Length: 202
Image (cartoon, rainbow, N blue to C red; front, side):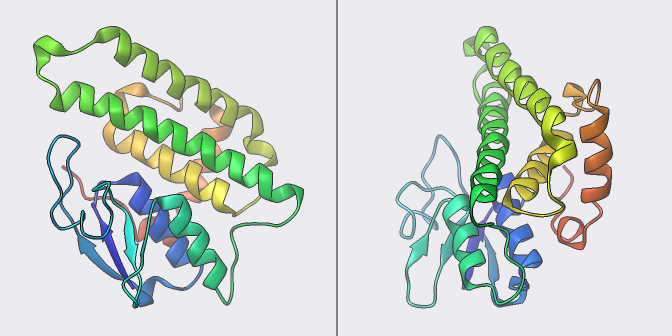
């Protein structure tokens, strides 16, 4: 299998963490692919017409995207650890994954607004609205973190979202007022799957 990814992508990191946790990281060739919200992605588009990463190209040429689909595929083929529970616990895990992905959605478009959009065209109200969504989601996590299981797709997604906030939004200071989440993340970020997938600085 070949994973098209960007080293800074938190969605790609989520996929890689799942690959490590399920013992499949060694079966995946990781290929850095250039993507941009404003330009084409010639190395990705033949596989994913959306031009986005992560995209997992299987041995038969089939391409899976986005991160949620890839994570579930890897979980399905795992012969050991499974991160998608069954029954009522499944919906709880999926909701937490959606909450974490929502944080990332808001964070990424905020970064585009701040870094890529020409300064005279930046929209302060848009930026503030996205940051408000991030803070609201973080507050929800603070309320449920004590009841989260040790490991499932929801906890992986939340950890990757928090890691991205540290990486790109240190000024957000997400730990302030959220001691339970901060304590939880301090433990989770030490997992080998997380330390093996830390994005490059810069």
